[in-house]
Length: 237
Image (cartoon, rainbow, N blue to C red):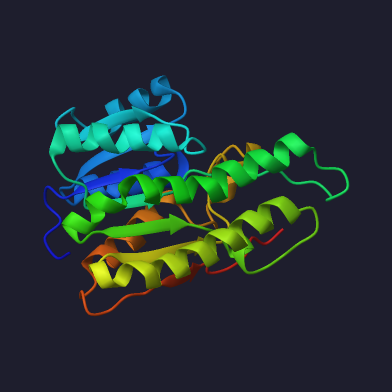
């Protein structure tokens, strides 16, 4: 996209963790940033710490509900008149053996992690066609590497990778770029973790923000459609 100043981006799950880290970096690059959370108070608190109301918009949206995402996109278009980038970041993880995980937790992951990325794209695709924009999903290395106690999480992240790659092929004729980022260990609050100095070896949220900037600044003729990223060295116990 070359000149990112005043480009408009929507980041789902942007009130903390990876989403917040991405938002901070894109604001530094001069973009207008909308962030969503299921709780408006959380989005507003994050937005206040990120910047001014001119550059940051807080939105309440549950990505598992298509109506919420359509409403979120409308609010962005009403405020800034366009939408250039959508980053489908919202996600949850619950880990237990497949014979023990509850139906509710299974469906929460499917509805948020997998249905959510579809809803975010479905709600924004017409705006992205107009802007010849960029759609990015946050998957995980768990989208290609399965592990015990991860059946639900693996299923959704494998799905996100497949969905995004197929969407990339569908949307190329409209000059919409589509990529999925697949991080390994990131220093966030995910799965009850409390980030501390013990997480210094992990990928930091702002590192993912820098990666997003790299994608947005890539020559338009080149598309890194699937990006794996992991800590340089694992933690030494």
